[in-house]
Length: 299
Ligand SMILES: [Zn+2]
Image (cartoon, rainbow, N blue to C red; front, side):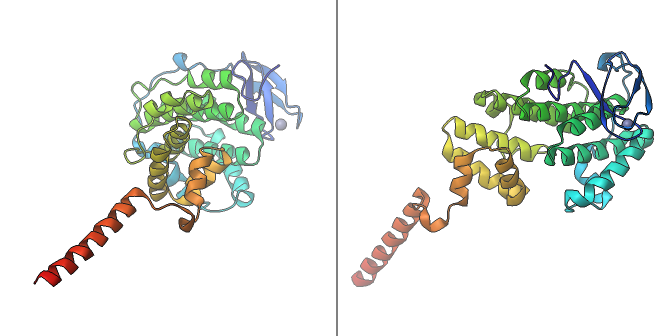
């Protein structure tokens, strides 16, 4: 039985209609099961056999920048998904254009949209198609990280490991290495190795890069699993301050991460016991008043 993200099978999007298609790893001529057009497929490309190119600047990996330039920032999927689909259809025909940045951006947005809609086969097909077309190794690596995390999310641990094993951080930009590390943390979190997650992801206050928010969420969940609730709560407050409550709490709820810590954050302040620092502060203030009274009487 194969799984959605099974690494040993090959699934790409039909160049004509975009429907996900299983194709032979060795390539050949196949008929699209959806639109019946004839697809001539090249053999699957293996990372080790591809030529190394000069590294791209960090801006080439800036997904937020891509989203802003698309004009779709903050738009609902019902509106943005057809736009990303059209951008992707165009970009896959010219994968070398602008070093593959448009294909990279459209791929991740489209795949995220499919994921949000629960359409996992389409999500896999656009990601794998892009892995085979993107000219930059860093871009391919980040797309493989997305395949690994999507597989992990479905509990397909073996597939997740296989996709991530294709990523070698050596010689790649820091932002790509960060993404790989957070993906390793995601897999460790999935298999319940919470000590490893805390080791891989730096505390929220020190985390940088596009994957900092995801890293913080995983770390908070793993701290909670390790019974380090106070640290988990402190890091949640920092993550919310840095990335916004809607993003952090929204994703954590979707991924069912750190339920106790989220509940503690959502609880109304009245319902909470005063924290030790507040108690100490009140005692100091009360002591100050007593001292002032004593001094006044004495003078
Ligand atoms: Zn088709």
